Amino acid sequence: MFKQLKADMAAILARDPAAKSKLEVLLCYPGLRAIRAHRRAHRAYERGHIVWARIISQHSRHRTGIEIHPGAVIGNGVFIDHGDGVVIGETTVIGDNVTLYQGVTLGGTGKETGKRHPTIGNGVTIGAGAKVLGPITIGDNSKIGAGSIVLKDVPANCTVVGNPGRMVHKKQPARKDEVDLDQVNLPDPMLERMQALSERVRHLEECLAKQTEESGCTMCDHACAVKDDLQKDQQHEED
Image (cartoon, rainbow, N blue to C red):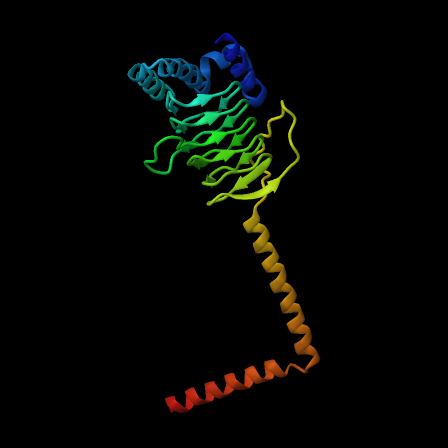
């Protein structure tokens, strides 16, 4: 227990620049309190004391705003930053050195039986408000962007954004102790497509303008003539 606590505290000190001391982390971080309570609840759950385990987890939920089912398996060095609104389902498995931000849901998609919640690999970062649903696997060192909804497996060392989640980047494997916490500089495939479309439209407009100029503006003359005829007909009807 003491070894796990040290690993959890070290993870917070390493990943949160706001953390100034071990004492502050121990007394003031709801994510750490939720993880500590979960470890007690999980031990009771494994021994068959289901109701007692749920009492511990629900008490922790009311104190921290983080709901972790006592059946979930959580590794070492897991950091739940801020944490309010985090929900972790019964059959979830979380590896080592994982970072979860506020509003993350690791949940199911219905009333399936058996394994129905995600498996999160080592070194994964899941951004604020992201939803990872179903018995899927998120590979080691992958990153889920804020607000993403992920319903399919994600390979290792990938970045996923959007709704539904789309894989937008695959990077080289990270070092064992490296955790990528950048939630800002993520690829945006929709923006890239819009920019490409805008550039294509600009190019076509330049080509059309050049062609019109070379042909003596016959297209413009024809359009103007049609407009004049319509205006004359309208004036004639009014008279």
